[in-house]
Amino acid sequence: MKLEKNINLKKLNTFGVEAFATAMLTIESDSDIQQLTSILPDYPKRLVLGGGSNILFISDYDGLVIKNEISGIEVISEDNNFAIIKIGAGENWHNFTQYCVDNNYSGLENLALIPGTVGAAPVQNIGAYGLEQNSCFERLIALDLLEGGMVELSRDQCGFQYRDSIFKSEQKGRYLITHVFYKLSKSTSVNISYKELSQRLKDNQISQAMPKDVFCAVVQIRRSKLENPEIIGNAGSFFKNPVITQSQLDKLLEKHSEIKYFPFGEDFKISAGYLIEKCGWKGKRIGDCGVSEKHALILVNYGKASGKEIFNLSEKIIESVQGKFNILLKREINLVL
Ligand SMILES: Cc1cc2nc3c(=O)[nH]c(=O)nc-3n(C[C@H](O)[C@H](O)[C@H](O)COP(=O)(O)OP(=O)(O)OC[C@H]3O[C@@H](n4cnc5c(N)ncnc54)[C@H](O)[C@@H]3O)c2cc1C
Image 1 (cartoon, rainbow, N blue to C red):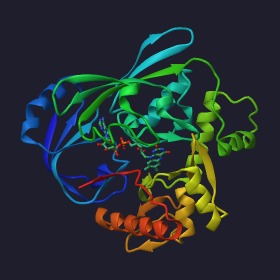
Image 2 (image 1 turned 30 degrees about the vertical axis):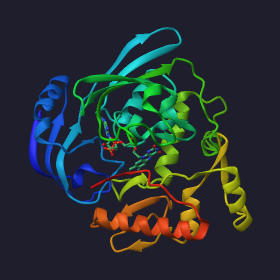
Image 3 (image 1 turned 45 degrees about the vertical axis):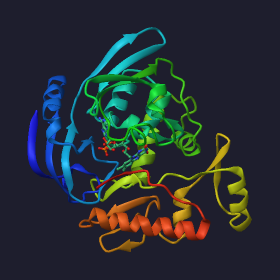
């Protein structure tokens, strides 16, 4: 266990914004967790940090950052159809999906190349290309930072929703997730309902897609269209796609018949990127931050932008989308003050 003071977090967040934390503790094992509990009373304000790919530091962090680097991938039970796999929360998510396809465990291949750690996946209920992590999620183990002691939480207890869970809402900041369990299939059936994905498989001349084909197609698509944080600071989609009711949709279509929408349960999902683009933001730059030229949903740091400047830009975008479409955009990323 390593406790460091006055740490610059610039290299620990994919936006690449500068922010100093009072202290940072890196934990790698269960014994580190026991030591962590002994210093918690000294730091009432704490933040669990994984890969920093879904976070925006708006100012310095006056508290303890707990950097999760607990590793390990272990098959804990297996039959002819399924395997239950236990993963250390500090494992890299993409490496885990690579492990799954390499070992013929299917179910998460659509989520290849999403940056960050396994421990953050349930927090955000990560999703892409027609799939969310909760479709294979089994349970997790976490340290209760409020009450002390380890807890086990089932899928129902995690309250997964679209890019949301109890860890982002009513229990925000309460748990340090240490291990996640996924139930993966041994079948070769795949989910290619997402149009762009099925088109890419066709382009790759694959008619009977296997999980590995889907994994490769997802990697190809993501490499071609997303901003790489190693080249330009960003945290993926900054906003969630708004979900609206039928009556809201009807009103919207009266004025904006061109709007794209998709059924989402009984409601409808609107593309936030489309709304932002229609407000003229795509490719716009203010100082050292801006909206990606590739995708209007991605805010970028050209080098020296501060978290506050990126936040202010997001406020302007929310205001203009509200003004033009009367839709309130919600941020997907976690703001840290
Ligand atoms: C280029 C790019 C593309 C992306 N594409 C997608 C995408 O397609 N789909 C998608 O859903 N997301 C996407 N994201 C967002 C991001 O990758 C995910 O949200 C990811 O799960 C964040 O992981 P992280 O380890 O970096 O989390 P961090 O940014 O470190 O943390 C995110 C939140 O989770 C909490 N947290 C992290 N670890 C733990 C833990 N062990 N216990 C408790 N709380 C924890 C943090 O406190 C914070 O609130 C993208 C990001 C980038 C930069």
